[in-house]
Image (cartoon, rainbow, N blue to C red; front, side, top):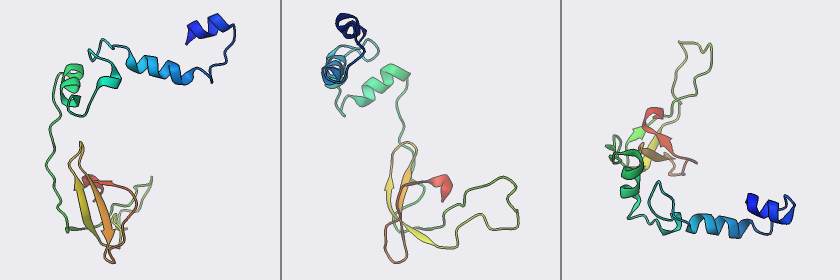
Length: 123
């Protein structure tokens, strides 16, 4: 990028940004041993192990589809201890994602989807 700035004697880069990104993604990176554009989902575990020295372990799913849960309320400073820390409304788990960490999609009892995903600690 700085070569372009020096050559043009200008800091305008809008017209060359796409080509800069493409050349960056097509060049070999020493940390992963290949170009980022060549990485596929099949190679991700090998690259992760090369970068961090360990493999990602799939976490156990603690809740299953159909389990009934409540959502934790956000803890504020000086929250009254005698007030409930959980929502009044009850939800059901509609889908569990075994990502790291495990996340869950919820729906209310009317089968309407709740926006967002939730961690097990929030349920």
